[in-house]
Image (cartoon, rainbow, N blue to C red; front, side, top):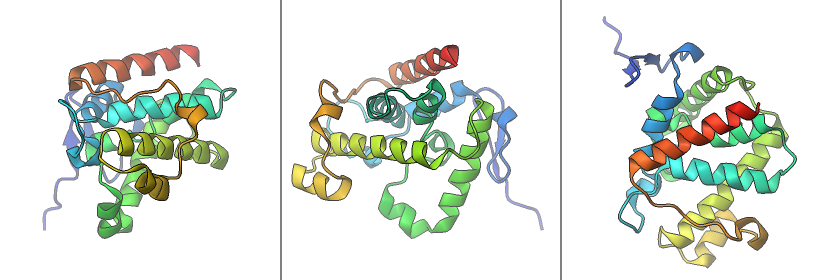
Length: 196
């Protein structure tokens, strides 16, 4: 019996095998483009544009910089890329991930490892860095929930933990056209690579 196709053709021309992803089949332009067109919160946000995973990733990288200001640039890059696999597997909300089961997590881990290696990061991040990025991710989720996704502060506090005022001071949620989000993501990636 013929195996079902498990690869996706990217705009760059690369064919990414989802079952066995390799770093050579990963391009930042594909990641940035895909993430800019993937909506967070299943698109259930206020505004003229969906809040994209690219915008979220830029915010998480900024928050990580505030949480760990002395961290090497490579960990800021890891924060920017923390949801990069979603350029091919989409952004599933937590209840859907739970329903799908462990297969989703395994796929995400395979893609993350290949993406990390492609950009000179270790396949698996140190536990401390992973925790700091996760904290930035939760603060970002709190901001998104309360500012554009219709959650009350009490709901967001319960689900994501209260966002410390010093971390979010002066930060806002960006809603812009996908092409602008894509370009901002690609530019930030280039800036971080140049500093490595």
